[in-house]
Length: 261
Image (cartoon, rainbow, N blue to C red; front, side, top):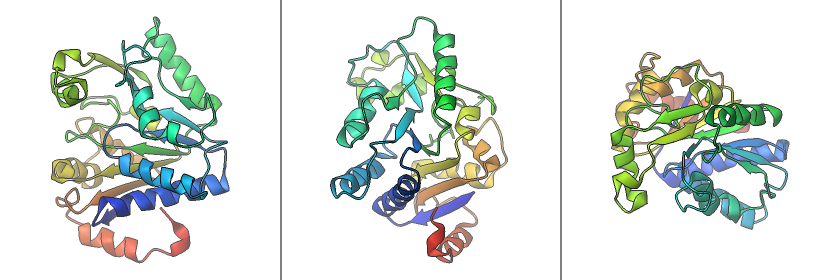
């Protein structure tokens, strides 16, 4: 696992955009894994700027989302498919039908989850998966206690998670769906490159557990320690609990320029 500590979010966004730009230059039909939430927003804005400057194209790329609410209509503004379109995919040149998400409106939920796994496999798997992390160590909607081998499935959202997301629903926690479909930890671990972003003091303990703690279902993101190509990008606040922060900074500063993330 590579740990990269930067002073500002803009620096983190530029490094991730560099990795995606390099990936698409080498493999224009690459498959990207996209996350919602606040963590990747600066990355998406940076990618849009590079697209507008003619540096990067998504015309042959495909993308898969990490998760989706169950029961929200397809035109709901907080449906994750709508959110990612608003934040990123509609602002660049992804072709129609190239961005996929779990079907939270399906009548047969288990079949929809299996179909999503099949669609990822049929696309050749995800080349680069963007991730955020919750203060309790969850990634996607894999809350503490999730199986480290789990695949795409339905999950019941905790009261705390729904309260955290109520700001997107006018502050009304009862308007937040009780269920979601999420890629499992095993699904996420199948991606070829995991790129996790975290900023702020609220993420410091989760990052400490992720990077330096034992692998445990109590901190689901710790499964990333078993991934052969995982990158964790942090600001100084999110890195404040790391015991080896000086080491991580020294190693990153000494990397060959050609290596990238």
